[in-house]
Length: 492
Image 1 (cartoon, helix red, strand yellow):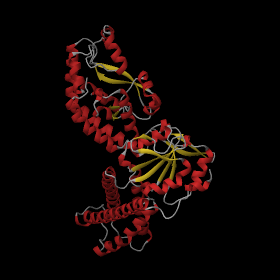
Image 2 (image 1 turned 120 degrees about the vertical axis):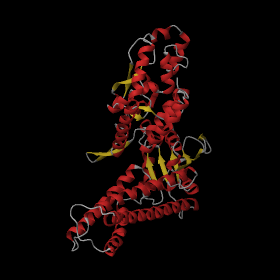
Image 3 (image 1 turned 30 degrees about the horizontal axis):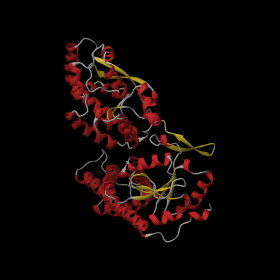
Image 4 (image 1 turned 90 degrees about the horizontal axis):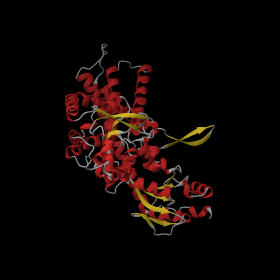
């Protein structure tokens, strides 16, 4: 194979030109949204400062309205230029959630610092300080809000086939299939998989629904032209080093095509990896935790405030449950379950006791039930469960004490199912990903049917949550948990 087999023809086909036109339209719309939000932020800051009278103790001489109008007239274009310099209109940085919002906040802060320098060194130093602070806060919030709303609109359009990026996966091996499955599981990501390029499988083979093998690796140039490919995703384990180098040499400098390479460790796709330089050598390192930076702060705040509020609301209910358990059967009020947390560290998860103290002996008396339990780790008609325990499990009230685990930082309100060390082995190649996040009181498994979901499906639901985490995903699951608990589907 020669490098020439990879070369592209010009011009690009109509399909890819149409997709790039959509990208251009999106950037134009985003620029207009930013412009409106910046202007609205300055206007609202002026209204609050000079019409509502919000100010500090020092009252400067108020310049005329036209002074602020002229100032904003010069500031706003510079603001958008700085946004551009911060990469806020580069498509690779758009709709990335908290990362994009952090860029927007940093850019707005930088712009406001320039205004402060202008005030300090300029001849005009009677600009109201309250207006400056209010402008910074309101403009930053407005820009983030505008981008959040536009992101939601674009995600809904992507589900209906708009604003999609055409992608080709090089390699239909186990790693390539894992990449394709994860991209297909997230339609809001905006990726349309045209298919695979693979030397082992013949053209037309379909390993996944609607994702066929389009041809060999040697025919990539032709496949890119025919299908308007914008993203080439390489499963690194599918190609030898020589072919990888030829591929990056051919497409690495193409303006209309982005080439990406997976880590080669598809089991870690859920966890994430990053490139770090060690002795001036770029090396991949595995993220020990799934959430970092702003995500950790937001999730911690959500867990802390909601768990404290829930404990205050449910405290009388928890006292009543404790009394009922004590009266129903002999034994302790709480059951301590040894489970695995972040970093593989074990901790005791609190639950109200729902079983008799001689539960193991009761299960041993029925070999058929014991086999069912060993298979699913659940029993639909469990003789070990007490009368009050059936009610607690059906209503999920037995899990209320886990709010204390959340306050201690051992659990989260939303997360994957908590599992024991013995169960961890059943997660196979995905088990290490469980150690990167806190287990949750509720999660995708809870709102998807709980015990009616097979064990394999539970594993995939947990991986889906870890892979697609966002604070909005947590809020959505919390909202869906309410009807799931009320319906009691799969609760036993």
